Structures are given as structure tokens and as C-alpha cells.
Length: 395
Image 1 (cartoon, rainbow, N blue to C red):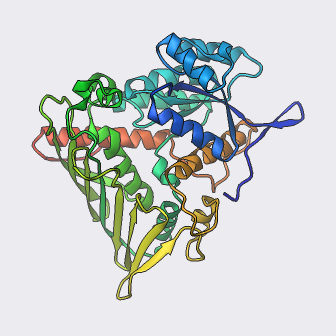
Image 2 (image 1 turned 180 degrees about the vertical axis):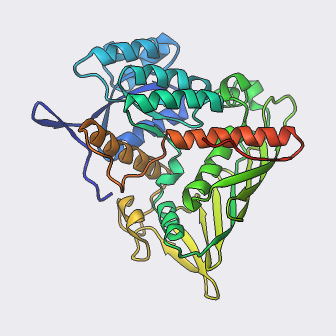
Image 3 (image 1 turned 120 degrees about the vertical axis):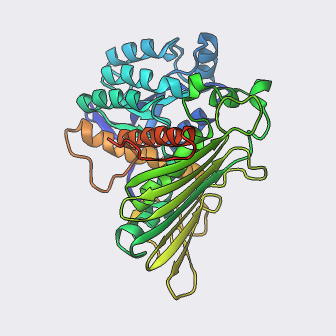
């Protein structure tokens, strides 16, 4: 990236932001992703954690990561209290737990005066998310929701193309996110990641919908900026005995007349992480595939298809800000995730210095989480009503 490492001044000396983590201990996939992403641009230093609800497991995880054992906490409440009382306490906490814990944890740390980086979806319900929003707005703290696909350079360029009118008026939006890892009932065989994602008490009203359908919705929303007007959805549970959906098919109506379709599945055998976005306007169309993230296909109307690559002269300043290495060297999932951490660090620095967040700094916020929850609830309502058209209750 072209932005220098994020440091804050303390006692006349520069330092990294002190990061704490709740969840993400041994055996957890996403915790490692957050830790790697936080360190990639040298903005953060992990110094504390409540890495597991199991005290012994939390301590083992902390020691493995090189943390001071005295800063491995038995609970997130203890961590928030003690870290807020330290002169060298954490500046920001990463919440990498199952969904049902996002809001309770965020509330405790916001009340302790600590910035938040939280996994998606935001909450278990729209009402719960709105309650958190009120607290966050009064706290004055930065709240980042890790819709990490918005951090890819060519996703930023796609958004810039829409905003500057390169594609003309948007007519069609097609987004899909197929996976196959839940094609069998592995949650019944003790697979930890599958267990909580298929449990309504821990995941919420949406299974596949909440896990990856919200990613697909957020990506389309981020790139196009089109206000969603109505959804017509069918949620399906194909695996016998499963309590939440594992396949999602949604028709989208946008304000202004554009139409769209969203498909997400975790039982699409042969697909790993097949996130794909296609946007078609009156003057051209684009296609971006996460499995090949350094390429954006662009076809102006009446002209041959063009391939735009990350780091090339064909892409604009929005993408260039997110690019670390020359074209031809691949950047991917971890770098995109790291871009979200970097943008959040810049926002935290500005807020802590009493300054406005620079206009070029761009990261998914709590408001994106609220939109995601309104989307989930509208989709569930539509499906339960037999695929009726439902208007999301965006606030």
C-alpha cells in the first residue's frame, strides 16, 4: 500500500495500535486470519486476549501466540475491565466469535472506551443491531465490520467505475457465492465450525444466508451503491436434520429500476469459495471473481472485452491505494482482509487525535452491519411467506 505504517505517539515515541482479541484460539480459522491481516502493514500489535471460553485453552492459545500470560483473560468482561484500567491497555478489540456473542462483547468494550473490529454478521437480529448502534454512536469509537471482500483493489476499482459513470445506468446485478463444505451433515460429526453455523441459537435466523449470503449482498451493495427496494427469496435446507438453510436464491429489485439475483449455497458440490459479481449498465459490464482477484473483466458496449489487472495503469487511485506489490505478483484474500485492518487503523488514529476520518479512508462500518441484518430479516420473511416480495426495513 502507499500509506505508511499506522503509528500513534505516546511519550514522544511512535507505537503500533495495541490490539486485543476475543475468540480465535486454537482450532479457530478466522482468528488466525485476523492476526495475520492486522500485522501485514505493521499497524497493530496483539497484546491481550480472551481467546476461548475455556480458561485453560485460552491460556494455551495465548502462550502459543507469545502473549504475556497475565493478559490472557478468562472472560471478555474481565478483559475489558482490566485492559481499560491499564496505562498500556488495548486501543481496539477484534471480536472473532460465533454470531450470538458479537453484540454482548461489543457493548462491553464500547462501554470501556475501546474501538471495535467485529466479524459479520453484526448481530442476531435487526433490533439487537440497532441497540448496539445507539451505543456506538454515543461512544465516539470506531466500529469496523469485517466485510473483507470490499478490501480487494479491483473491487475498489469496480466501485469507482460505477461511481464515475463508466458503466452508465446500472440495469442488472448478478452475485453468487457457492461453497460445498456443508454438503454432508458434518455438524453431526463434531465439526466445530459447522456446529455453530448450523445452530440457530448461535448463528441466528440465517445459516448459509447469514454466513456467506450477507457477504454476497454486501459486495453488490458496495460496488453498485444501489438502494435495495425489495427481495423475493427462497431458503432451502437440503441436508436432512439441519436446522438452518444451506441454499439461498433471491431476486432483487433496486430503487430506480435495476434488477438483480443473488445465489449462495454451501451444498454446491465442486465449489470452494466461488464468490462472483457481475454488473451490467447501459454503457458496459464488468465481472470480478474472487478466485482470480487480480483480474477484472470489462466490456464497453460494442467493443471487445478488456482485462484489467491489479497494479496496472488501467486502474484508478482507489485500487492503487490498496495495492502493495507490482502487477503480476498475486495478491489475494489475506491482503484484502489486511486492507480493511489498515483503513480501520487510519480511522482510529484520526479519531483518537480528535480529527475527522480522511475522506479516502474506506472500511465497512456498523451501518453496513445494520443493512445486512435488515437484508437477512427481509429474506427470511419472504421465504416464510412463500417467496413473497418483501421490503427490507433499512434504517
